[in-house]
Image (cartoon, rainbow, N blue to C red):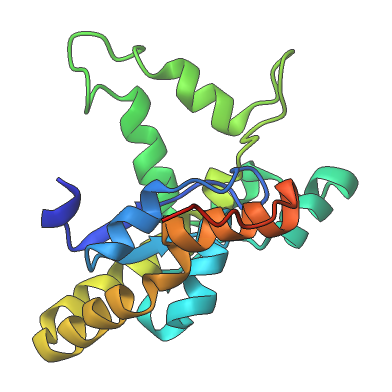
Length: 186
């Protein structure tokens, strides 16, 4: 599926994802990234430029600030954003499970109610919702511009050299393992 994809969704909460490689594989195959500034997405954007990716959501600093000092209330978003409210109500009104309307009640509760095991919306899903929806609209608009999309896809491939295994191994040799080159006899 990686070689056939146009968009790579990398939607972890900023500051929570280790730097993975899947998004790099998508980039190497020309997929544009929609994602948060987290993990390897940060490096991808550094290489290809923000104009060739679709970035949304809280920054790592913002997430850490909310976690340390509070100030985030998902119920405020629920009460003030009709799209968020509609989506969340669909979790509990039978839209997705007509024969068992309570099937997704636990998910609903985890987003709006502080439970004994976790704060409400631990991963700031509702906080990032509007920004994500706006980024998806940008993807739609950009995809309609075939030449612009092709240019961004080509730039993603062209700028992906940083992520080659050769560079990574050389960095490990130099910076971690501190190995000297060995000349093999002919």
